[in-house]
Image 1 (cartoon, rainbow, N blue to C red):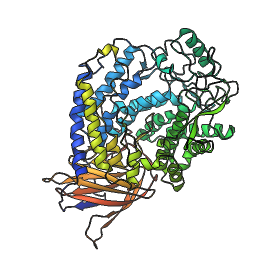
Image 2: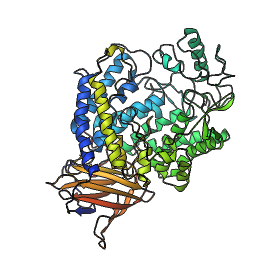
Image 3: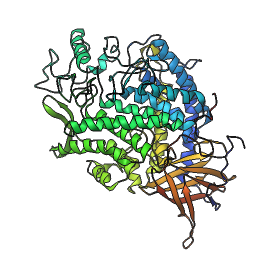
Image 4: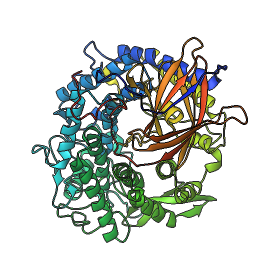
Length: 623
């Protein structure tokens, strides 16, 4: 048998033959797949040259920007992995190569990876790489890149000497394919100075800024004198040593593991997360935001555990520390099946909660810490709590989530669409909790409207490309497919700054020998739990049968126990033992099936491998 030919004879099967009128959500979902594909082609045609490079300027200085160009097409391979067209898949691959060439010419990319920047921005652009693994893990060049990029952080790449194995730290917050950047220059920040002028000053003692009276005081980065002072302090205090933001790099190492299964990668993720857990314990339960080159907390910050790059004070505050703990904890849990790796995140959430206070009738948490203590109190946003509970499905994490203010509005609020494929998950979560049965049709309607809004922006985009901001295209990208992640996989989607796509289930097309839903098949996950998933599958084609393959987990990390049909007439029962990672579903013309499937979560070695093929360790091809 050819390696690409599915052999599913031993996979348990459920067959549904009774036709019925497809529900509206199913026909809308299939229409969305059909709508996105031509929109993607029109978008690429409008904004790129024949070689795929962006129609833009000839030069772009500094270290910021390549992440934004990659983000402008990141959702393309994700769309394909969900069941989107082959053409969008091909465009996604050609656009990654074109952006890489273009920003190599600008001087930002070296050896196909950012020469140096931070892991908030590396994390955003690396989603593209992770989605390639979901789309097709058998492309040789993708596997080679995955291992090479991981090697930049595991000590294998002597040029990109980012890793200190003795102290278990990434040697600088600014890092990449040229290694750690211990001294930043004015040119590095030239494109970002106007943006950062709108943020609070990195330190309280910047000359000319009275941050002792107002901790949110700003420093004018546009003033050369002020900027010179800021840059000197940043190089002295921020550029040397490790920060929690670097925990986002665990996804790149996990990505290599999903291709190879090599223990070296698993061990690196666990050791690095453990190092941050130990530092937190050493710092009285607060995760420090700066660790010096000798592994000493506050080594370059006069002993202060706060004040690091993208740390508790500047520029975003708690968000980056929490996301690093979430992303690393999720990756470690995936690699081990041990959800206690999320305890670091829990400890920091609970710490912030203990510091909360009520202001004007609203419960608020501190976002920042500086010389004045905790400050900048704001109403907590539920995203991190929501992702935590989705991963663990535990009662304790549910209680944490339900305490977040504003919970009553999740079922009624409109979705918020962000860069690329992003879609706010609160409404989806309310649906999964049984609070808004209309959500599938609502979110699909809103997604159509969002795509049309972006296409209208494109049709009226008559400005001079030389004057466009580097974020220009990602705000217009019409491949808005995260609502499809929510509906078809039962997942809130990724943590945008570098998380992997964790999900209860994933779909494959065994007839087309590819990932994603088969043509004309729609899927809706209605609920998830620690030991089950409930979903519907619908064949919207009234003329031909369809076959789909369901996988337990995005990376086959879970196991199905048994599948029970919920759509049979009263008194009839059909329970199929599965006890494995996959389940075949055969649907007659216009047929549907409603399933309750028992699960054991995090029981198997996670992998990108397709159900009918070998692990993507050697069975690769050129593309």
